[in-house]
Length: 407
Image: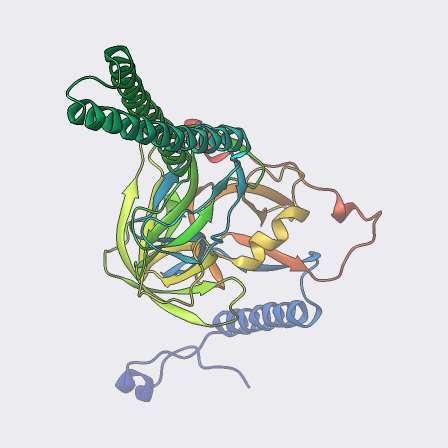
């Protein structure tokens, strides 16, 4: 049956034209091509691609980073107790975490060098006191003899005893009184020397200036310290615990007052609530965050801790899967930089250095690097290659971000 060569009245009424043979075959061809493409895609989906890797795209997405920062716990108001003078530390009776009273010695120093001096002072004082006692007896006897002579002299009308005997008794009593005063002065001097040596010995002991808890021992028993050298660190009782952690460049600003949780090493999974007090920056530009904890006598000073906090959401940032960072060592022999492995258009893998930012546990923010959205990052092997397989040969790393930027 042949198609009409001219439009009918119905076609003219409907505004249509009869279908030509060429248009029909074009439609059939397009349909067959679409079926072929669909068949190829289906076959590729069933068979998989021919690369030995699993891949995931680099994308822009919202990220809510979770951080786990390690630090050391301190107590507010910590000071160091210093050695008053050069000494040998014999013992440290107050261990870390123990409490001391005001004026209590926090260390025992070796006093062997002063023991002989103090023993000599005690012996000298005892001898001086014996001399004072002897001089007192002599002075008393001389005074009694002079008193008898004076009495007889008065009663005998100055006839007996002789004047020479009376003057001799008077001179003897005076010499005894002088000797007693001299021995008393010597005894006082010996006593002062003993007290001075005892005071120097007492001053050699480092003492707590206030009621406190010991937070750190800075020296060990048997070590020699110099005057002014710190021996132990102490903090006031009931002082607030603080944790100081270093912040990397990619963390960004942190608002004061944000909440965090602190895990203390060795205390299990017990979490202590903490609050960000401030962020300090030193002369080199290194930032450190100071978190405050509520007073808790169960928290050991100077304990190693882990601070967990959640940063505000970062919108539309460039992220890569954490699995890509884990796979990166398979892609390069240079482990001095953080990198990921990208799949090039020709099917080869190349290592790209990046500056990694914070992570939410699944994805990590890319702060810098020759990475664009849509690129495929390698996250694992489809099948672990054999040791001699060429896939295990590490591809050459691409240029660093700095070099790429300069070019």
